[in-house]
Amino acid sequence: MATGVSKVHFWGQRERPLMPNELAERVPVTGTSKMPKDLLELNSRSVYVTTAKAKAPVTEVTKIGRHNGRTLWRIAIPDQEDQKLTSLFGKTRFEKKQR
Image (cartoon, rainbow, N blue to C red; front, top):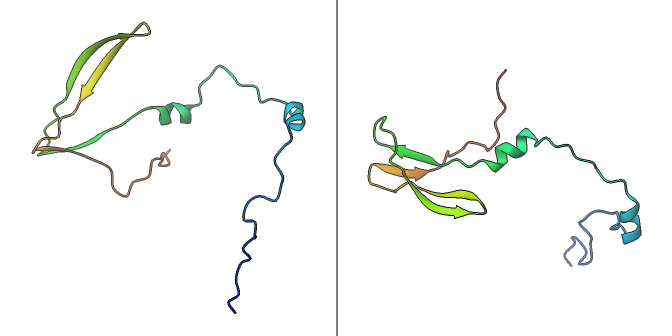
């Protein structure tokens, strides 16, 4: 007979979830008006493009209109023979900055 983990083995946390009254009694974490720097970095978007030689990539910026009182733009980066969308292979999202 094979030995191993029981079919009813529990892999998760050993603590039970909070009951609604326990959750209501917890002290809330108060925030500040400052946006954390790491969250701002996560909210930004980067696109990586390879080009022939040191030529800058071709982009198209088109004004679409207005939405919720703000101007809406479309930024297109065409995938052409001499420029291709890519990613930074083997690089992590967060790298420690040298001081």
